[in-house]
Image (cartoon, rainbow, N blue to C red; front, top):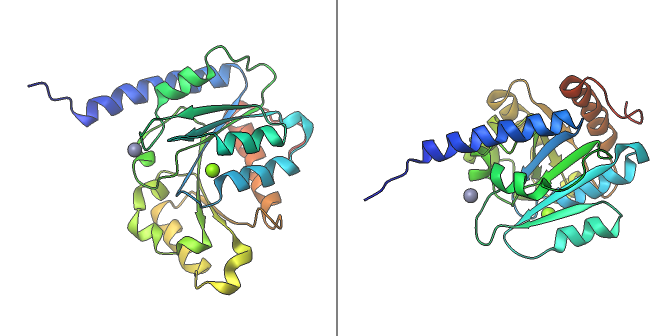
Length: 225
Ligand code: MG
Ligand code: ZN
């Protein structure tokens, strides 16, 4: 019987992820891996951010879904170039899927690559895709207990974006508690509180992205900051 240890698979993934990151850096493409539960508002967050980015930002999006192209259609509708990955049952993206998705795509005009991962708070935590930055989105409607229940994904993210803050009056989500739990799990991470529909808080995210872009690649598109 052949038994392949998960550790070995992850090691192979990490090597490929490192190659992806080098490829993106070489092309001056800043890559962000956006993770979070199904329905936490990842696509709406992208729409909200892109509506406020300047032209020079030139994003490219990879949409990861088990099936369908609903989110890719939304990106096309707002004029953002998009590649759809259908994982055919797999509950997360891995570095090989990203390498395949960008193969043959000219990255020269792209400043930023956004990877919207499959909606999942569990195994997406374990797969480096070759991103420079990982953002976890958590909506107020999911509850503030998710940080305690699914610590790994929060521990391994550079920022927590609390979404759907406009729904706060109708829910008992404790923003201060979520902030405190994130501080405990990932002391260096930033916490943003946003509503992608009203636009509240998005400018803070964009400013931070600009800083991280500079930190990763040395320069950023002039529209930032
Ligand atoms: Mg989505
Ligand atoms: Zn998975």
